[in-house]
Image (cartoon, rainbow, N blue to C red; front, side, top):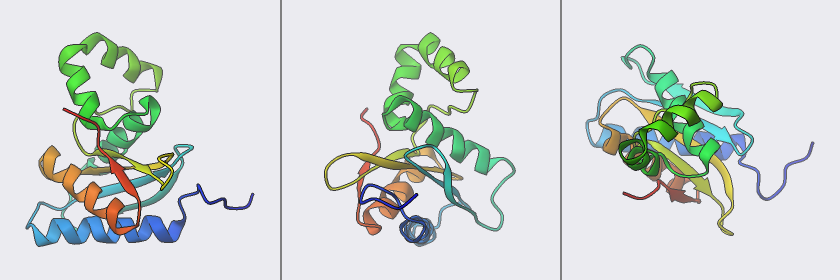
Length: 149
């Protein structure tokens, strides 16, 4: 399989993670776990900082999985969880339980607006996690779509 313009490369995913971690360090955030999935939902890259608490990687993955599965940033999932808790519960069941409906799962869009991947971040407040994901996505040259309030 050859890469297309719409593929998220390993190099881009690594730039994204490095920039997200740098943003967290510059803001003196708690240790982070970051996962990057490609558009298929396959794990492209992952990093957990020293001192990241147990299961932060799974939480980051759940933010990413939920956003990608439903095609909306996890900030929108957070709103839906408040407005439609039964829907979020059913959606979590439908995708195998890996859905964490809080900010920090941010879709990665290319120049044409197409989803080419997703980033999940966990370790600090949900808003800070989301800010790190956005910083990483922008540094890698893409558009971040965190969802709306």
